[in-house]
Image 1: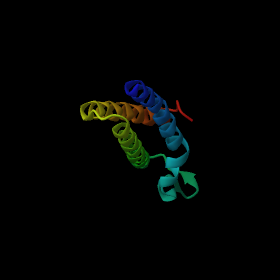
Image 2: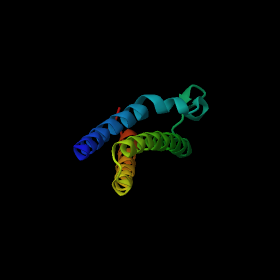
Image 3: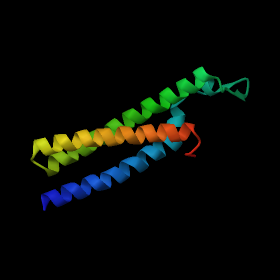
Image 4: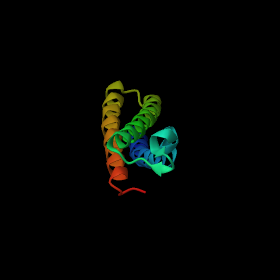
Length: 115
């Protein structure tokens, strides 16, 4: 029974983490970027250095948010399962999947595939 709950929880987690990171990338992380980096003389700045800075800030914010979510699910997994080896293996999988989500979100947002 514990393994069923464990597997169900982690599958649901994969869906939740994607939508949380998508929401954060779309609506929240823009607030972390200073206005002076985006605008100059009431015109949007589109030079490469500014876009790289903008991408770096959004990526770092997503990595921190993903790390917090992974840490929370790790703590939940530890409380549900007593098998430390299984929880550690699951943690590694969650980190890899979360980083893949972050790469897809950054790539999609700067190529115009995400709003």
